[in-house]
Length: 396
Ligand SMILES: *Cc1c(COP(=O)(O)O)cnc(C)c1O
Image 1 (tube, helix red, strand yellow):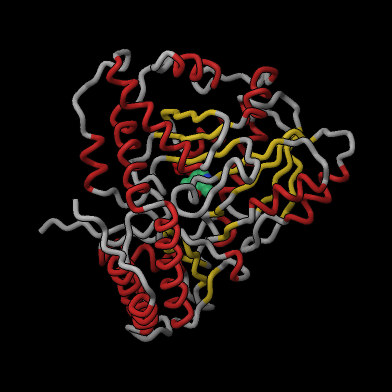
Image 2: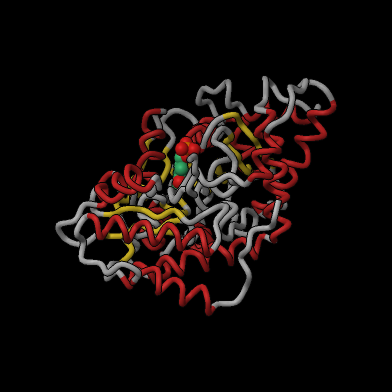
């Protein structure tokens, strides 16, 4: 029997049938008006999801990592200084990418499990009286540790320091799942990918670019060709693309935005919060706790669960895949083995999450971890049963 369990990795996420169908289209001439008719609503939809009142949306055939690269190569020059906190694998990898491009990264080392240290960032900006820092990089949702940083507070800190640095935000695992306000938060570049909150296959980097970042693009000298925003924008204006677009994914993106808006962005965020809270109740019932150091840091898209002393999170992930055909996320970098991750973003509802929690418990029992079968599931059941709102996914 063929069966497909939902995945519980924090991306790629489960793909709704409607989006799979929307991606499956015959070959279309991307220089024809038919492409423009498909592309324009997708871009307009992304603009609404990002809450952008100004600036441009750029959609690249790439992934989130390519989105980081595009963000920096389009706005910065060799030797420029950027300020970034490192508190997980994804914030680390963005720093590494900047260094490989010859940028000078001023790194604020932060314990894993913490978020962007707003006070220390503000202090660093205040100390930079010569204005050498060109950009502040922030990972909105650190997917390795399940930590959400407060981007609005970061904006206030930059303003309080009276500093003119651009604010670049990695929203790959938050955008489309947790509140994001590009313009209100004064974000200059927001980076998303197709395979997380947008519930698509991997293959698109989706960026919001502010007028300030567009102005920086004119003088930035880091080399770029495939990712050059100037070429993209020139072609967009003519309803096209500078090279062959990922047409099927773009068709899917239009459908994805439609689905998010049919549910309502606020309802999507509320659903993610509820699902996450149920997972957290289960984690507590197991006698464990999230890697995120305090509740205001808890991510609504992924929970990194600290496993008991003497247990290895990677064993659970491996067993879940081998024995039960279910995917959880392993711990990365500093927290390898110390956590396993439950992704709870994209197309998920109460019932699906309960299946994931039940499977995690079976693995724990199989591995001899000190957890009683049903304990976490029961805690989540009580929460889901008792909290308002129907989570049935719209029938396709
Ligand atoms: C998944 C992820 C990325 C990397 O995206 P790819 O699409 O795998 O290149 C970057 N940042 C965060 C926070 C992520 O969760």
